[in-house]
Length: 172
Image (cartoon, one colour):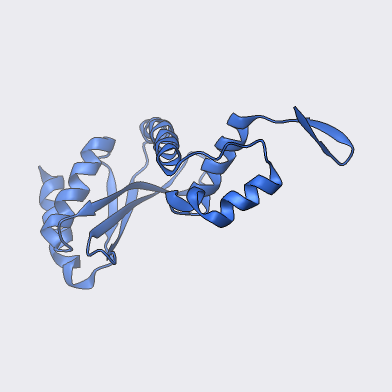
């Protein structure tokens, strides 16, 4: 079944639209629950009535599949580039009182293009420097990254402790 668009018959592709929806959720930093909102469902029923809007759980799973696929590509790039990486952290506490940390890697590729990639986004037990250093160290091991050039943390009171504890880990 198709839809006429500017006089051209278009073939509807459920999977193509679903992948575009996942990309939109990721790039626009939308909550996974966005797909279950009344306004979005109404919009989709008008824009493309053939589209079966996936559940929040399905979108979550699809986003993690994209993350895992992109993570493998990025790990390959890190192995090939061999440049040092700069790390930044961003920490905050949610309305539900859950502490989170986002670890971002910054690096220059072979063509001298600067890249910024989120390496991990995770809950943490506290904003204390020793906890942050432990989490950063674990993710660097997971990512097989050992050429760290700089570490910048956003929590001034934890900054010195994080860097000191993380330096100990790098020395080991």
